[in-house]
Image (cartoon, rainbow, N blue to C red; front, side, top):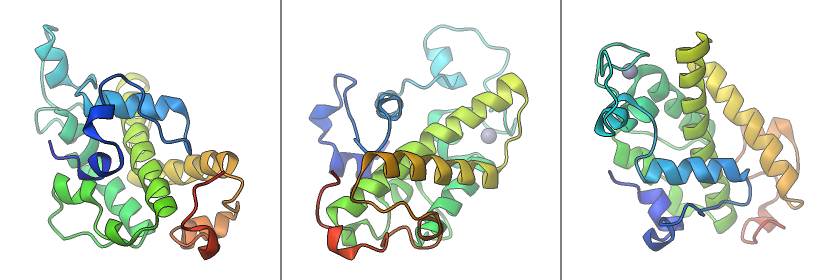
Length: 194
Ligand SMILES: [Zn+2]
């Protein structure tokens, strides 16, 4: 599994002990990301590898494909639609045929300042977490499983978390929705958040 964006920001050597962190978002998201990077997400194929006997390995959301981590988080129709929406929100172009590589490489990433890259990383990590949370809420509580709802949840949570954790990032909901890359403060773009 290629994980370009994560490996750019987090050296591989740091993914050994469960401590990866992006201080713009809660620690639980870093822990989930570490589990993701280690393949420790309880999708059906991973449960089977650990000796758990299941009636079916099919994805519980689409009932079409074996449920791997990549399928659950990226390829299943609704998850895929979420990523399309998140990239669109950040005005980052996606090729029509999205591969995992391209998804994680984040076209346009190369032009980001360090703080923009850190915010984008926080969004990528949060999106994975919230897709998985919504998958579980659908499986266990039969909640809705709708891309637009998941996208909104990512926008609301990241706005709250990043706004509360960085005094230098202005909390402007309108800007967050329509121009998140610039945040209205180009002068802070090359500094770390305080
Ligand atoms: Zn599926």
